[in-house]
Amino acid sequence: MYHDFNYEATLASSLRAQWQLDDVLRDDQDLDFTRNFMPESLARTAAVSSLNPFEQRILNQISAHQYLAIFGVVEEFILPFLVDHARPHLMGDDWRIRAILNFASEEAKHIHLFKRFHQAFVRGFPVECQMIGPSEAIGAEVLRHDPLAVGLVILMIEWMTQAHYLGSIRDDGDLDPLFKSLMKNHWVEESQHAKLDTLIVDALAEGRTEEQLDKAIDEFFEIGGFLDDGLKQQAHFNMDALEKAIGRKVEDRDAIIAQQHQAARWTYIGSGMVHERFKASLESLSPRAAERIAEAAPIFA
Ligand SMILES: [Fe+2]
Ligand SMILES: [Fe+2]
Image 1 (cartoon, rainbow, N blue to C red):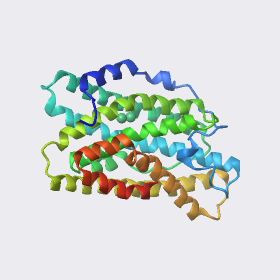
Image 2: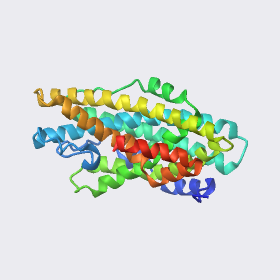
Image 3: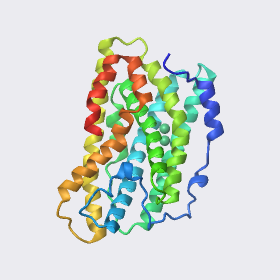
Image 4: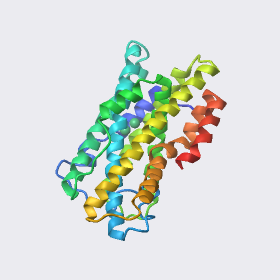
């Protein structure tokens, strides 16, 4: 076995680590717009040399708005996936059903928390930032795929939040403390989700032939390509918001869009694809699956 995760221990850790919405952001708390919100390792906004430091910070905050929007979208398809997965097991192992329902309940709380951060962002930011969606339509497109492919996408997302938090503490401390706390608290609960999703993926893959697994990886790539198109569209929206916020057109608009799209690819896809634990799950499913995903990973670096 490539891991020692089990439902009972994971549920116990989850219950110990749980936090409430107000512990992370109260309704009346404001974000500090004099600071960056996103770690540079993810936003890559300090690398945009045609913008001055003030404009780079605006773009960094727009990148944080994107974080709230993208996580809002993905958590909204994780929740129905979990509920669907839980339903056939309602009468089975008590630890398993409690762990999965708790996982679903925590994701519902995360959706709520991301919305609360979004409201705080809108209150403090000078212009409206458009976001891709509606999330129901994105969710429906993702969820029409093989549950194993969806489970793998979710597993990749769960592990990537670990890299996001580590990225945010590695940065030099200039980040808005509330946004940093969002990353930290999300990571705390996601680290248990990643274990549960590992068990869910193992269960969904059980008994599949090599050919069926290969087909599931095809669908994993379909979902990845679909999400990547969304990131590209979002990079255009982000540039529109930047130009509105700074009150001028930027000359190298297309180059910045491409650079920011690449940053988003790393943040929302690549950083999960190369995570050791995600790779271990793939390896145990099928070495060929692991190989196919490793080959694609550099595109998302
Ligand atoms: Fe979450
Ligand atoms: Fe999660």
